[in-house]
Length: 139
Picture 1 (cartoon, rainbow, N blue to C red):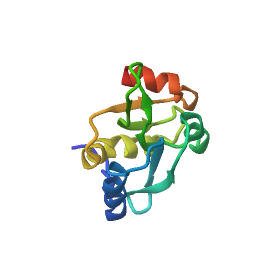
Picture 2 (picture 1 turned 90 degrees about the vertical axis):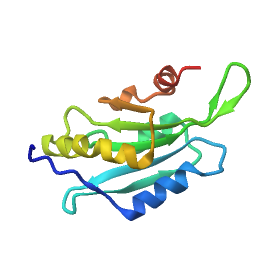
Picture 3 (picture 1 turned 60 degrees about the vertical axis):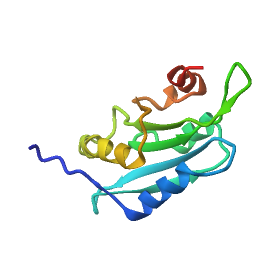
């Protein structure tokens, strides 16, 4: 076993994940989570409602990793609208190595807690675009 510490998912985050999963709003929203290095816990960074993918990109720090749970309002070619939930792991190449390890080590536990099968990883903030997301989700 390596010395990687898995950060605990706080009760507040578990509650927020559950609320987010069952939210009734019909827009794109994100729950942004981060690691508290001192406490070795995953905590809420911010909740973003009624946003675009570009808004999300602007809200994220460019040099620090983040976990993003995204509820995306997707309009399909046949006129249907769905709200796929995605787990996005943002880990910039130039972020602190210790932080990258903490985030990477805690990712699976958080993803399981959030019960999200769709998980994507990005290294560059500029890559987080609607086009990229639609490519991942398919139509």
